[in-house]
Image (cartoon, rainbow, N blue to C red; front, side, top):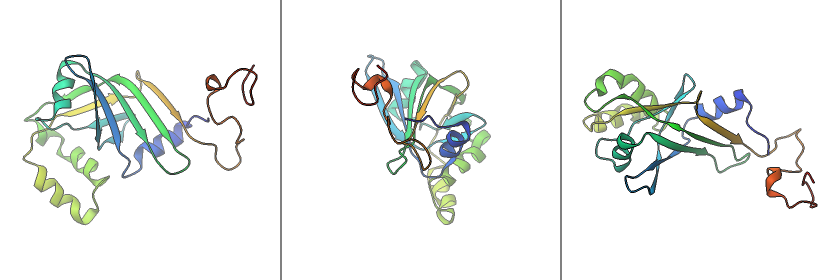
Length: 168
């Protein structure tokens, strides 16, 4: 399955409306996955947990994250990121990054409703985290598109040796 080229990756991560799932580690070692909004800028992924969310508490104790960003329609683009989340602004510092919050909201809420959404949620304290893609493990793939070979859409490790599309 083809990997996303750099320009395809950047374009996909910048598309409005695409959700991200963030996986964190609870204090007992169990995983917690939450679908959230995000913003991709400057080769980093930004996201904003609310103060009372369970996953914010998890990040405070262990900054390791796995991020899954994908789409359901063809060409089934997928991006997986494993890395460390960096707390840029803690609770109570929301005013210092309000413009970034507005850009996140604009990806998910229609323009005529975005400011109302912000005003309805502005009093809920949040932190601002980012994961730098440089230094993280990033994997991506998609189905072949027009002009690309359609055979072998899975990674070769999934094919049993001696079968169609296997390398052995």
